Image (cartoon, rainbow, N blue to C red):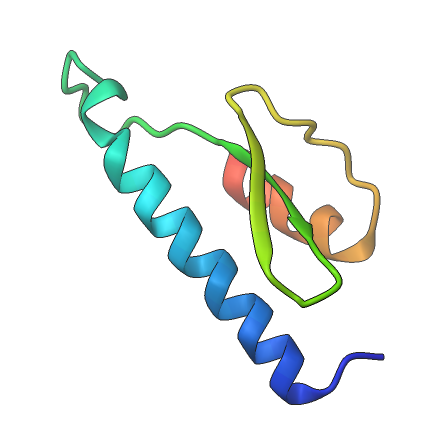
Length: 80
């Protein structure tokens, strides 16, 4: 498994990339300014041999399959 240091490094990179990416596109989402509206995006990342995180793509229609226990608990809360 990964050490705590590597886990923290990768997690911080993912959060930084996601934050920057979503901030850059914020004016393109909900142009009509609907209230109580949200989008679900799927961000796909790759981690290289040096534990550098790369954003591969962003999906505007991500798979919402409950493929593990975490998603089985999370998705109904989001979509409910």
